Length: 287
Image (cartoon, rainbow, N blue to C red; front, side, top):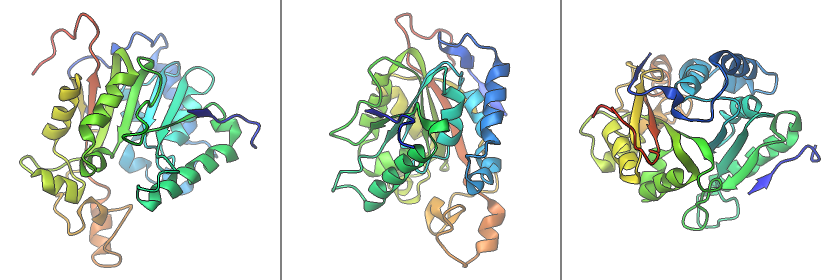
């Protein structure tokens, strides 16, 4: 892991989101920090326009984010959520960005490009990102996303289908579990498939069933504590020619039916919260 210093220039809740023992701050400072980050000049305009689809404030509040937490984001990609998480946690908490291994020749080429661009982004704005800790998540070589038992919150956004495609989903969820403190939470946002969708279709389309995500988490030892529909899109039928990449922002079909897919918007997504049980377990969790 390495730290980047300034020297180089509507939900259904099963259990309260405040299950972590770390959070002593009230909700108001969290909300104001998130709001401030969302309107910051450091954000890319193209990222800001996607707020209406990704609902960062509502999503992070549902996951129980607090400024004094140790948070790990899995595969931050171009840094969409990093633009919000880094300033929220700066000065009070810790933010681990568990990215790709840019030096792995066996991975798709875009991953190395994405990771290097992400690290360049951090280096270009030390006033925002100087405290970000970059770790690697690239199985089988790199699986320690943060020191074992140190994280209050692990977040993974729209990655589960990629884990499944690589045959690494179980190991990934095990890595999340290892990094979390007892009582820590895992937040998952994922393109949502219709119930009964086959595993092969999930891998092909990028849409995964809630049942499959919950199974992966439970097999790793997690307990489901909440669901939210904040990232739902009832216009998305999840049966497009190029899977989830048919819709914005990818628009893989080009100009073909572009207006139709833009009218649908970004994908329908599940938003799930899990807890790593402590020694006493998690009482009174509905099945």
